[in-house]
Length: 328
Image (cartoon, rainbow, N blue to C red; front, side):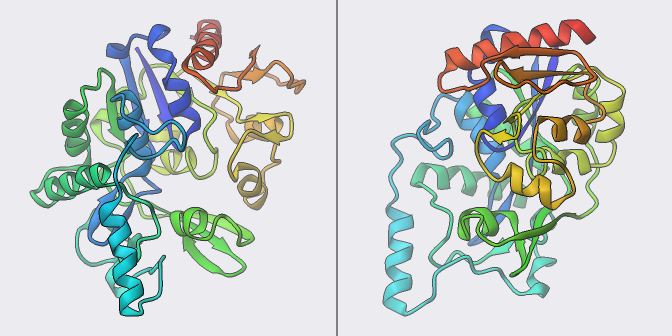
């Protein structure tokens, strides 16, 4: 039995080759939901869906989001309507009073769907309609996620990090932005001054049970992909009590992709593998790239950690297994 903490693309890439190393039936994935948004009334869970689509065999692997070969008729016509009506494009963050009204799980992350700033395909949208409808019928996000996982034929157990709202808010020199507005809408350009996880989310019984197994943290962004999961009540304590192996998203001080370096620096961490080790005091061992010469005070397994194919990911997964065997 093993549990992965997943956000962004780093851990999903690792999962793409982990099936031959870790039994899917014995694997649980806890997905970050700090990136979730309500867009045009639909509840969108990007990090949940990356795992859902990847493990379901439909992920667009060129972008690592959305469904391969999806059409975009609704998305295209939204832009056409906005242009014809003279409406400004997104992101259009709803007024403060709207952020705490409506369904509770969407607090602090509500956007208008006018000229939607996230590109959502037609089949992808069907998933969001189904998720939103099930939430409105009274099901928890955990129950909804498991229902969708069954629909996509997943063999792993996929869990959201909490059923409660917890929004990742990026504080910048240009104001406060939800992570999706910062990263997708503004292309990560505003200078970051801090990161806030807004809300008081509790861990579910399913998450607590999963965290009693050995834990793997893939090369996901430590601040905005792993950070929200750690901010959930009970998670940090559980990580301190179970074997944990982390795969560094850095090679020395060079990040593989995304805004991890900028966000680590903004939150007081050295943007490097050494900074990852400092940020993860609960980690018992690390998997580092063969070219990473960082010396750590915990066991290290080195391999080529670049993951362009499932075969690459399987190589990294074997290194993870070796590291777990050293500390479990």
